[in-house]
View 1 (cartoon, protein in one colour):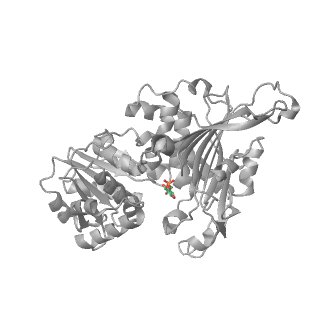
View 2 (cartoon, rainbow, N blue to C red):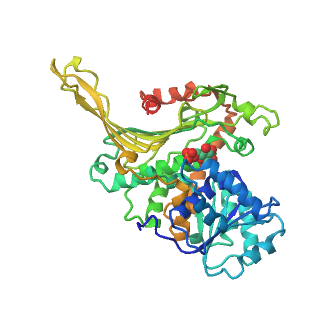
View 3 (cartoon, rainbow, N blue to C red):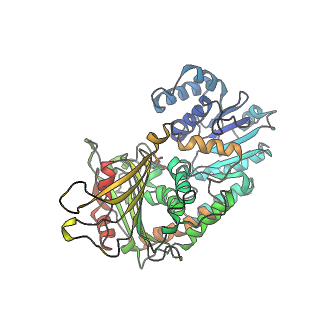
Length: 499
Ligand code: BG6
C-alpha cells in the first residue's frame, strides 16, 4: 500500500452545510473516492449537518444522486457505495439557535477519542456562531479540528472578526483554512519543479525573467450561486485566495523545508512585499469586466445581468466577473518584474496556467531571414490537462540555411505518470485528518491577502469604477489587452486555446 492510500486514523467528519452545493458536488465525492481507495477505516463516520429537515434515508438518497452525477465514469460502484452509505449520518441543526444541537451531541456520544473534523461549508457569517455552539455543547475535543471554507469574510475587518470568533474556541493549530487550489497536483508540482531541480532556481529572478502571467479562466457563469457571487465578485472569489496563493508559490524564496511553518512563512513574505494598488495606480493596474450575452463552446449563453438578475433585485449589477491586474513584488528577487493576473467566468476555455516568460536573448547572431527569436516560456498548466511545457527556439530541420522555429518540451502528467489524478479536495480532506496544515492558510496569510486586496476594492469604490463589458466566450474586455500591451507585452491566449 503506498503512502497516499494508507488508511488514516479513524475519524468523525461533520460537514456543516451538508446539503449545499459544495458538500454534494465536491466534499462527499472526495470522501467517497478516499473510501474507494481504502483510506478510510471501518469505524470512521461522516455526518452532514444542515437546517433542512431530512431523515438519514433522505440524505443518503440525495448523496447517492450527487455521487452518480458528479463522479467520473466508472468511479461509482455498488460495493463502495454500500460501505460509504453505511457511514453517513444526518442531523438537522440550526447554527443560529440551539435547535438540533442536543441531537448532534447524542450522535457524538462516546466518540471523544477519535479525530473529529468540523468542516464549515457554510456562509462565513456562520463560522463564529457554529464554533460557539460547538463549544457550548461540549463538542470540541482534544482531537478536534475545524475547516473553514473560503471566503473568510468579505474584507479585512470581517476576516479578523471571524478569525477572532473561531480563534476564541479553537487553537490556531486546530484551524484549517482551506484553499482548494493548494490541493491541486500541479500547484504542488510547482514546489517540486522549483526545489527538486537545480535547473530553474538560478534563473528564477529579475535578471532572467521578463514577466509572469497567471490565468485562471472558466467557461461557466455563476450557475446557481448568483446570491453569493453578486455580493462577492471575481476579486474576492478568486484573486484574494486562489490567484494570490499561486503568486506566492511562484514568487516565494526557497523555504528551509516543507515544514508547515517554513512554507507559510515564505508565502507571507511575498504578500507583504506586494506593491499596494490604490487610487493613484488603480486605472493603470486593474481592469474589471462583466460578461454580456455570447457563446461558449458553440452554445449561446446569457449575460451576467440575466443570470444574477434575481439576486440583485433587478437593479443593474456592478459586480465584476472578470479581473485583470498588474502586480509587482517589491523585493530583491523580483524588482521590476510584473506579474499579470487575470481570471474570469465565461471565457473561451476552462484553463489555468502560469506562464514564466524569460528575457529575450541579448544579441542575435542569426541572419534576418532566420525568423524571429521568441523568448523562452515555461508554462505550468494546472488544468484541464496538467503539464509543464518549456518553449525553446530550435533549428527548422532541412537544408537551405538557418531557419529558427519555436519548439516545446512537453511533460504531460497524464502520459508520464499514467495514474489517476485525485481531486484537490481528496488530498486536503485527508490532510486535515492527518493533522498536516502545510497546504492550508494561516491566519496572518489570509489577513495579509485581504489587506492588499481591500485597497483595490476601496480604490474602485472611491473612483466609482464601473465594470467594462465583454462578450461571453472571449478573453475579457479590450481594456485587459491594453493593460498588458501598454508594457509592450501580450497575453498568451493562443497557446491556451490550442491546448
Ligand atoms: C471556487 C470559486 O473557489 O473556485 C468558484 O468560488 C470557482 O467561483 C471555483 O468556479 C473554481 O475552481 P476549479 O477547481 O474548478 O478551478
